[in-house]
Image 1: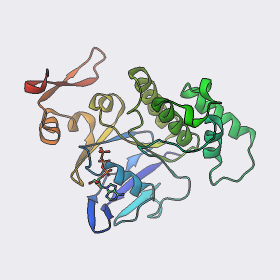
Image 2: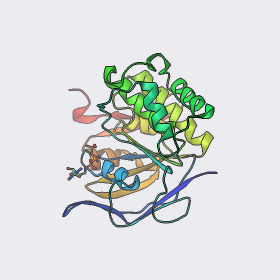
Image 3: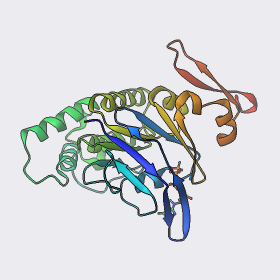
Length: 256
Ligand SMILES: Nc1ncnc2c1ncn2[C@@H]1O[C@H](COP(=O)(O)OP(=O)(O)OP(=O)(O)O)[C@@H](O)[C@H]1O
């Protein structure tokens, strides 16, 4: 079944400080990838933590049209910080993530799913390394494996490619794209690289200073006006040979 997620008037406060208010979206459908963009400290991670049920706050979050609270296992969240302090191996940590809230008995299908995810992310060669022995990029791939293995309805990925080299970024985003399509998962990812957003996303949500300032198809949202208004950078959008739009920084900041 295709998932859907709809936010109505969602907000976040830390104590008395309101960092996000009035976020209302159309129904974000399974099979689609929504990118959340915006300046540092705009409120993107706070929005993710709120959707994942880790923070309370005003507003409603409807998944598959039901209830205002996400049910267990419906939402999987990969935080920005992927540091670890455990002695588990990569394989153990991914299997443990798979079993989270799902009973202790490990079945053949659990093991097959772990193998499938490790293979998809091409991290089989490090399966039996300790988490503490991994590079930053490897840790990020393992964190991704830990959420993908749980078969979520809604997948929230906070900067999932920030530590990856270009080849891995391209591969991981392609994997996320096809998982969304094949499994009908609703994927929302925060990402700063606008060129990757233009390649992977169907829809873009722009958060600026705790407010959603726009939400729509990528080509309508990522424009020279957005570059200027949100990022204070002059630029234009051009298409590559495969007709995918790319941001070209131009003007005084083009060459430093
Ligand atoms: N645990 C916390 N307690 C208090 N304030 C917080 C907490 N976490 C975040 N904030 C504040 O909330 C605001 C939004 O932070 P958030 O992490 O959501 O931004 P972001 O858009 O994800 O930023 P970035 O792009 O830099 O990761 C910031 O002003 C931040 O200082």
